[in-house]
Image (cartoon, rainbow, N blue to C red; front, side, top):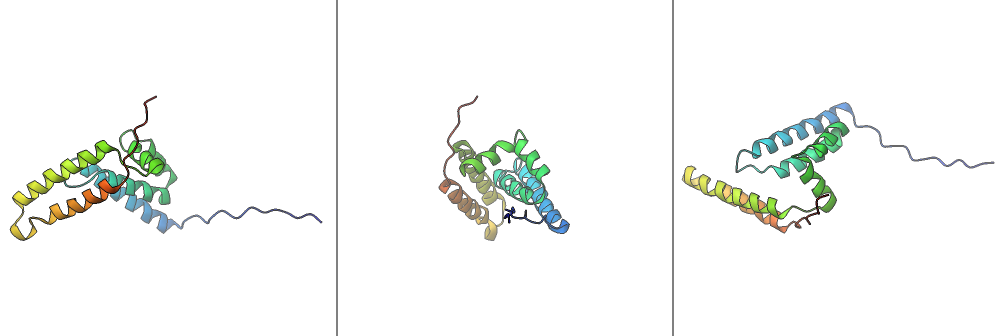
Length: 139
């Protein structure tokens, strides 16, 4: 009598509606990240990271496209490998949030004037508490 070793069954594929939900969430996150590249108050990298997470659940092809993208791919890969943010990205984000908060304080009416500054301060605190990525030598 021989004993047969069986491999565990792979997880069932996601149902189509759930995959589409992840794809839509990834697409919206990526769109917000692209808009954030042009609007100072809206961050880019967190939305791109969220898009990569959503695409990893919804579509291998979209996730691979994002990881191989020359502009969006490096921060996502660095986040996945090191769970860290480059110092330059922290500096640029902080300056942009400070400028945006100052402009918002100038233009917004009095009760809402400091709301962007409070949100940006929370994001900056979170950002600077993350580890700083170690720069790799270029090949």
